[in-house]
Length: 289
Image 1: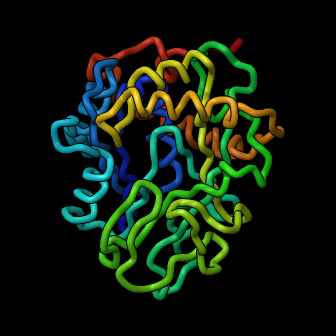
Image 2: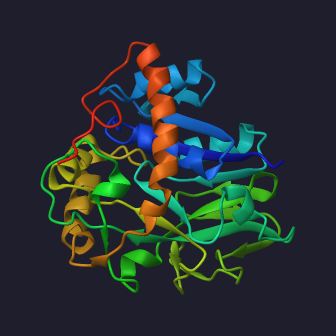
């Protein structure tokens, strides 16, 4: 069986990190390599407890590793890992498989000539929510930007590690083989990370870019793992907020995976409680209002 890894870098994601990991476990990812970028809100302790339990590998990854910690983390994973496939996804990105029961089934669609798959974003707005509520992200936010919104042309990648020659934040570098969309047609890019055509029929990456206003402000204040220039990143986020929070359409597609995610989240919660960890966030508590 192929080994399929989730690679991500996080900082202060205590409100969603358990759900994020649980979702990818429900999808059937076999390996989890999470780079902790100087978390101070309990995220590091959660990751370490799950590392101690054999659920993930946590690597301490401070800004002192270099000017762009996220890029360096991704490249570190490519060079030092031994897994077959690597999916590079952030903690606010949740993969939705529309036609397959697992990530293994999804990847089985592609022949040996395929090296990497580019998966489009579907960006979600705040839905008018101003405050954090202790409930799963995928259940709280059910309004996405319209299909052909320019934000949805961005993408992230999953690729065969041995045939990658480099990594970027969105797009990997393919040494040999094809770079395709989830439907199997050759992916065409403009400006590096932008796909010329949007393909969401087989798989899509739900990007909860905004969440609630409170959570967006926290995101803005904590800076970014791919930049040493926090103020520059904040300015960029401010300029994109109105666009990413534009009125959209109802989108409840991810709720089909909510039950499976919850099973995994409760299992991880039990591990964390046994380690003496508890926080006023889901899944430790739940606001059903």
